Image: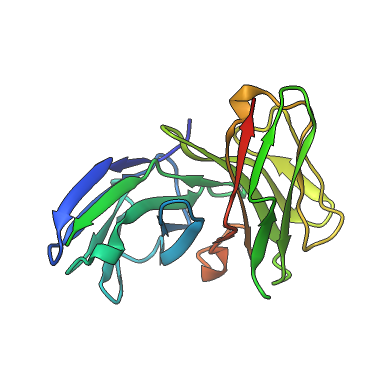
Length: 111
Length: 118
């Protein structure tokens, strides 16, 4: 399977703490994206990082990409209860026009 | 309303019946996708379409059929439903197909259809 791996599978933190989740993939990529899924809902796009970028910020989100290690990380700073959700990385397996999703990290932020 | 919609939101059917899940998007995106989401497997791509009348298999296509006669619609049919097809199904669309570093690869997801096969 080409499915990406994410870790940790689950993460529980206190409100105000930072949350870091990691994604590893197996193929060369053009870009990598992060999505959030609230319980019972569809996925919502958070941020896209291109293969020629190493770091990207969006509000309280920071994404890094290390193409030599085939890995990416998503950092959520100053977490809020509303950040409770599952987070998925996704990437295109270049040339095949197919996107692969990671296995997801379930984040719980305790008020 | 602009966006991507799926119908029905919930469906219960019996083994052997044919079921069609509908997906409609109003952005005129070229690419559309069907995924299934199961515990322990994350999202898995069933089929995708690069344009009207162009479809291709994803990771788990067996037992499913798709068509795309119009850009805005991408129905998914389970020809003879099986219990293993009990899942949550998500449709998504994007402007482009991931062949570049473009931000137009972003996928927009529908709310999902929860299908139970008895």
